[in-house]
Length: 274
Image (cartoon, rainbow, N blue to C red):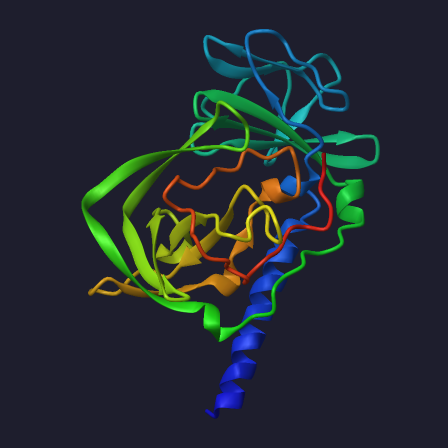
């Protein structure tokens, strides 16, 4: 394969990655379709257009549906008083409903020690006019060899969130070390990525300027037996919080602030839901 062919394939692969990110973002009932963000407590909460009265009972979420109100959980129709603790124990639940001509989902999930309710509607004005995400042009310059300095065993790390008072908890196998523009850099990596990939949250000298200020994220291929891998900053991606206030995204650990300008990957979105 010639160098020109390789470069063409590199650019084509990057375009596929970016288009897949944009397609996922514009799911009619995805997180960018969220119409609000609420946290449950012992007081009943009603949300216009969303069936039921929502609250915590003995610390567990519950919804009370009056006559004529229903939610769906897969093929099951829910009525009456419905405890939700078991349904959200493994990552949350998305309960279906209709609001006029719009179809909706009521997402219920734990965030730390809190339970959120986040309705989503498929008539989102924002998604109907989604302008796409600007990016830096892909360049092989930003494909960087890296080495994982593994911890003796995975350890838990707690990071903050864009919502004050929330925390996220991750397992970290170690620190990725690499050189960028002649500068020695380090990024704490987390496990749990798809297909064994590591997940990195980071800021750099472009954050809050040409890129979203709170964080970008990267999927890094699992290191080989010697701990070697490649970080491709061309695939630095925005989290949902770059597009909407209705997100609870994690913030990078303090040490994941790179001193160089990573002019690669996704830029600040053109508009957001606020």
